[in-house]
Image 1 (tube, rainbow, N blue to C red):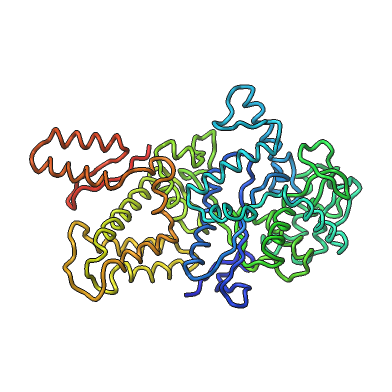
Image 2 (image 1 turned 180 degrees about the vertical axis):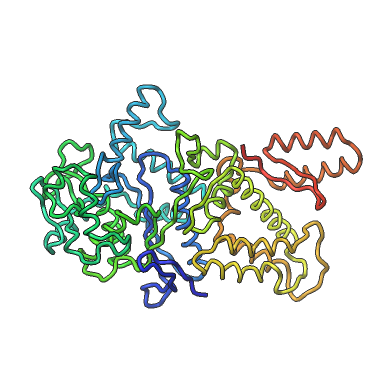
Length: 510
């Protein structure tokens, strides 16, 4: 099977072919978080879709070399304009935590000096790594073996200075009268191909969004900052243009080039990264390296809504992963809920949807446990799950259609009545069915998360045993004992439902 992906750059769905002449190695750069706060579930939707894409590539036999940055300097509060406006997000975070320290409201575990942006970055970076590991993101395991795969911009300042010098030498950048080094967008004719923005549109529309003094020194309103001398900035480094700090767009170009090469296969991010961030990355990367492309394929996830509206703390619908864990959610349920809607569609997160995702996972898990118990039972070689695996992969190869893949899996699960062992006949065993189910989970990534986050440490075998004991008590008309078992299950965070097909259960999400 060949993976087909929608490429934001070409606006077409294309067959994926890597640069590697042997066709098996893939270079993949993912835009990661700016660690000025805890990542919210909207951030994680983009990160998890990148993880699903990586896992799909690996199931198809590719070896993926993925890099995800952790931005710790240079990302400004007004990142909707290419030049970046407002304040550095890390300095804003340091100020916010300084105030929190005075009022005694520092986040739990934040034993940092709020006046030190680097300490703030370290705290939130550690929190991000913990959350990402809980959600089963494979890049975290990579970084445990090789920390350079989740790089910090502050570790690549000299490489950034070198790229700026190259851009100046090649007449793609200039030092303005205020000492700031700007990239000249007019020097790169392909500027705007990713986002659809034109230099003319930016020239007429951007001027009012940054201060007039800055506009006066730039050759074009669309030109963006590469290096800014600033003796007052808390995070600054010496450079040929004075002590200062790098532009946010420059950072990713340098880290991708240093760690993956001048031209890469895949670049991912949220749709808000398309402009200006990724547009600027393409311009400075191609002009610095001379390559005809920076990334061949661009993969962007659309926004996440919560209860049909944009996330907002004032509306009470703003969630971090930790918020959901506090409500009793499991990491597996959160992961499934965030990946089950197609990445190029807006997703709507609801607590009911989270509950539904948990019920689905519990159903898959019960089948997995049953197949494990009966894996030596004779069965047909091409059982429902073996057949479903091909349909599952086919859906994923169709522009990462996770919903279609889950549909194929559920149709196969529906074929099983796990209260009865099949008759011992056939040319194979149920071990092949179990293997197919586990291979599909290599992409979904939910089975191994049961001991991580929230109520994820639930003992499924104990739940099943209690339900069996309750059924026995009901058969023997020991109603008080049956009620005691129901209450015990509720205390464990498990709700049960009696129906025509027997008793089913699900975890309780508050």
